[in-house]
Length: 197
Image (cartoon, rainbow, N blue to C red; front, side, top):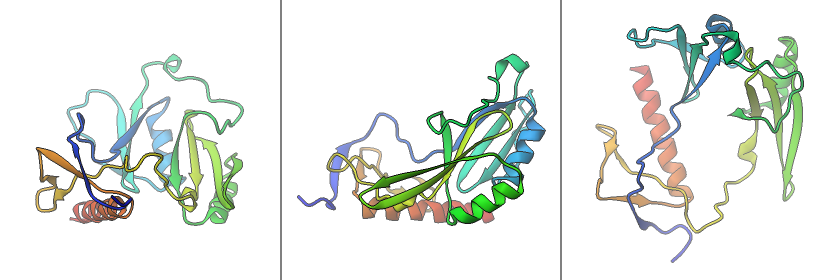
């Protein structure tokens, strides 16, 4: 059996499709929302009116960020003085690291740079904090190929594009490398169509 052949695996216990959103407690929802809009290009989207606490939802790049007003300042750790690339963080892929550096400098943002090298391939990374001290990374990580350590750990559930439901409940078709990438692109296009309508 070749590396790129289709194999059948039992349905996983959790039929996950993609990362939907990350959620952060904030000292000031309005200040943090402004940061994610102005620095990272997110846009505010409608939040369910049934919530009885202050917050904001933002969306871009196929991911949501949900901001929640903290109950007291003690709910949030102090913003770290030092930017530590080994801290918990969310990461965004970018197309032009030099432009990101220029923009961050223009905005007066402090950041730390790092370079990862593997087999002659370099990945540039920038790390900085949001107003509440959460770490953000900007990188060109797609320079490194995704190389599974086992024959085919990447799973892709084929979906019926008309209703976006899993087309097979009894089993999940699992595909390797190029098939998984093609499925991810199809899902992205469907998300973009849904978003524009």
